Length: 136
Image (cartoon, rainbow, N blue to C red):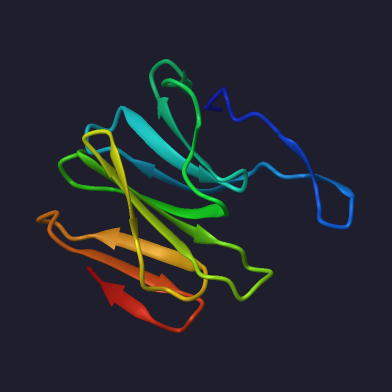
């Protein structure tokens, strides 16, 4: 199955070169097994319905940098997205969204490369290219 809606975006690098800047870094199932969430290089997350094979709503830009990881809580109420810019030493981004409110979590000084939510949905673990793992 190929999910429709992953549009390719043409962007320009800082030196003015044209580059294709849209590809999926991470994808995660919702607990119901009928939907997925994906994180992309175009700084967005996309929710898709598997039976219909298409996006649910519009892609949502969640940060200033690429989304490398996405995770969904076991109750399906929380989505977490992590990312950053591998080409620089800037801080990573870690965003949570539940009940329609997006929250930014601080702590990593470099790109967030892995995330996971505990089975009881009370803890969030994240790892980064800053050589740290954090629990929130």
